[in-house]
Image 1 (cartoon, one colour):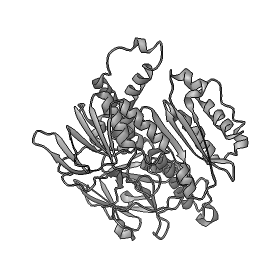
Image 2: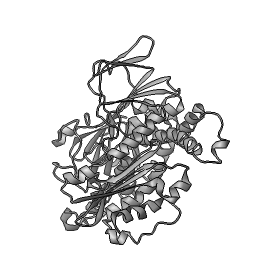
Image 3: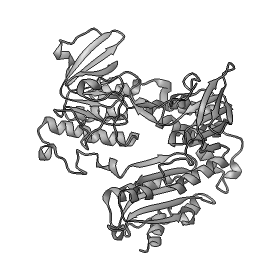
Length: 484
């Protein structure tokens, strides 16, 4: 694009959004719906990592093995199951969801929503100014009201000798691969590492997972982690916990070897690095507004960037220091866009000093974040673990129950194996955390989220009667075990 910096009729917008992933799309969609002239800038694919290399393809890869495992666990159905999983068909189904990188449908949605889509590399160039560069040139955009940073994150590659040179997979390669690797080494035992280890093992890989800490899924309750670990081992995944990778090497034949801290070595055809993510803020022009490049962006609950005067710069999603999950990014986007729209109308209450759980605040980020790990079985949680609650000074009481002892669960699958735990603030008699592990427990999570966000007193929750015979009956059993 030619430099049209002086053409304000073309280059001026009410709101400019950097990043067209799920978070940016939601910010732009809501500000446009509010009548604000909105532009969104994206250098990669519209729809972001979630659509093409993360949430969507990983869940597609996992759904077929999960359904097969459940079928084999149900009398009368297992007898009808013959043969093995068709890996090629699963990969083809994944491609039907991702479009193999074709973002035209999502781009059409952006335009149909009345948003101007600009493709190019964006960075801040001053107060309410954004510079966009593509192969044809540079353009400077001006925002009359707000700029929203929704640039997301990228995989972290640890500083391990030989690792970069070994050309490891990240989640991008691991969710878009066209062939099943014979041997897959996985570095990292968080959600991404565990999910993709389970998926590729089920599709035919021999998977070794290496985790530095002594257990998987360290952000979850220990019993949740333990049951996922037992299940992964039973599915054939080889787990090495309490050790770290100290060196990696890609050999001439294309295979890769890693050396572990205990001196042992693992040999694989591919190496997946899944040890966390870093914000895409290194080359964003952060220094021009007094922020440090490469850092996560601090915001208040209205998603206004901390330390920047004038209330014109906002941020949401994985590039911030808040809950880095797609659904939470969308939640933050709603608060962000509604704050921007209200500010342009001069309608922010209290001069912008916003109360928790208003339409303009992402309050749930602090203590009510729902999350699911789609391993087989699933792990799901919302709110605080027992340890986190104690660290915050909560007067903690806990209660747990075997989900398999609930009639609805035993009907759901033969030999249902699952576990539920509640963390309760005993001084207020409200739930502050809930955790589940077992087949299909993701569908139990929203009820727990409502209980945590709503701070529903246990005596009132007792009157939320679960239908019989469903797995939700576990709620009744948990409250009975607590003493109600």
